[in-house]
Image 1 (tube, one colour):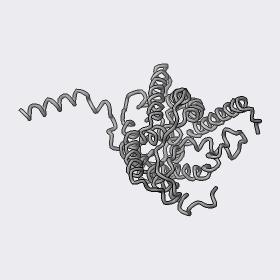
Image 2: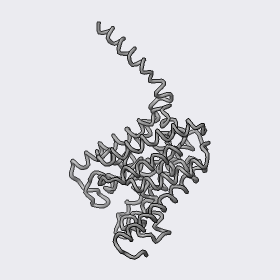
Image 3: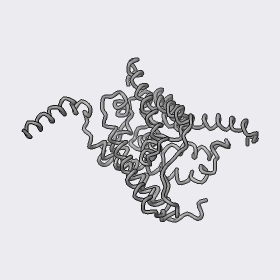
Length: 172
Length: 152
């Protein structure tokens, strides 16, 4: 009886077809996510600072712009360590890529998509108070309702946008 | 601002950045193609990146806050990341969503992507700086009008 139940359960799981949902497995994704969380945790435990990635854009612009919005005290106080954080991100990705990561790599996604999307990412993350790391990792990790609503919003809109773009025949 | 910092402050931030960037490269989020596959519902693996990261930070934040300790390098009390909710969260989230869905890249992943040798990502980074500047310009102007503070 128990054995039969087990068979039914595994057939049920098979019907969901995990292979179709996760064609590349989940191990690499989960390991990467764990490391991203650990990176945030190291900075948090050492300094008490919750580091998101996108504030770097504004705080770095304060070096070259006099705009009051870009020169808020919190940006001026953090712009130097945010440069250090970002340098670490670039070099950490580089170190992995040239050792275990299979070598340097270049995207085929068209430049206009990268640039146009980048402009909207720059506007939206700053207006919306966070990005994938600030809201998605740190905010959700803080059980912040604002961040959960923010993540739900950008995930839903991003999925819709990507599917519309694909349906219009834009590849890649 | 920097004079009184602990000498290990920047090394710890750098170490955290290294791990963060390596994690993004391991996860594949540095590749717009992987993110677009996720957003087109062809590979849901990215859910494990965000969940794995959020669960890790959630556990660490909760334990640190419960211990009521202070960060050794700054003396800061451990706290959660909380932001006030207003319409900007929805409007900004929607604009970010269109940009992420169009490009397949978000800020942290873009920095890391540069480290993987992906030079075309400079287009996205240039766009992000331009977008951040545009909203800074727009909001500086608007806030000046609202408060009467002269622009400088």
